[in-house]
Length: 279
Image (tube, rainbow, N blue to C red; front, top):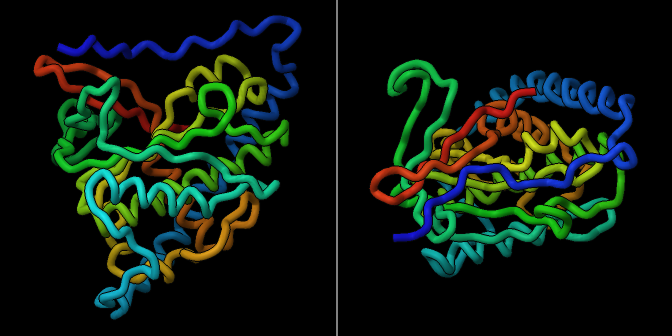
């Protein structure tokens, strides 16, 4: 049987007095994080309006100008390549590389997803569990430490803009995946903040972040052409999102962004355990 999957967090270097972020930076990070949360909450209402106008266009037989020519693993790779090439840093360099495949860790299948802090029908002790028989997983990876994005220092405001871009890229990956692959669950593992940008204790909590969606979460977007949701052509750069794209980012960030850990169950497969990412 495969080795037991470890749920221990990645070990990161100890912060020394020489490289510890100053208290002023820690306060700036907390303030910036709270401001971002406020912006996400305020824009969530815009997302409701933005989705409301699905109209008769949902019956269009041509959902997108581009589509994968293969299905299965090859189809997922084509989606990853197409979408990854569109998202850019302010420098013009590609934001991240994207690795596509079936949900798994250390070659062990992820067969279920458990979300903490839930309520209502279908929950068990505050946890909602659903299986993933036809899921897809994408790993978004920069070229820095632990897949973080190499983009210079840039400050917290630029880091927040890159974070929005990661959420929008994750959503576009999900839409193509649901539309053309018929997946029942979408997982995007996104990079942590680069070392030195935020306090070590904060970064440790953000080492494992994921965007997780089911088709029902984005049904209004799947029912109308992609071009009515976002510009499916050209490049998208950090700091240049329009009103509709910002509203979409708010919706994804407020309801489908999590920290995660792995738990192996008696049948040898893995459950992805999610905790909502709160500001």
